[in-house]
Length: 87
Image 1 (cartoon, one colour):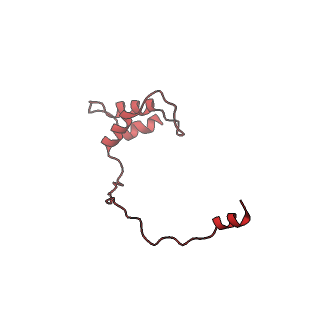
Image 2 (image 1 turned 180 degrees about the vertical axis):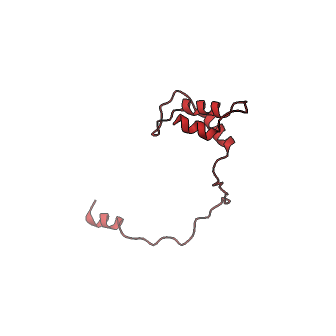
Image 3 (image 1 turned 60 degrees about the vertical axis):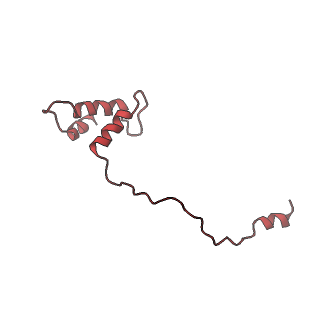
């Protein structure tokens, strides 16, 4: 490739003024914090036997916390207290 050919590759070109049409309707995203049921569902879907993440919390820890925080009994500590005890 000659220098003239290489220089021709880097010449600024005029861009087309036609806009690219977007055929997608805007979608409203829920930015609210997750509900308790969403958190419970997410924890139940996690696979066990995997390595802990950067926080050091394993899936087994979360599932154990969930079992303690949501049993069928009425005299259970609040979930936040159990969570703090787990950490």
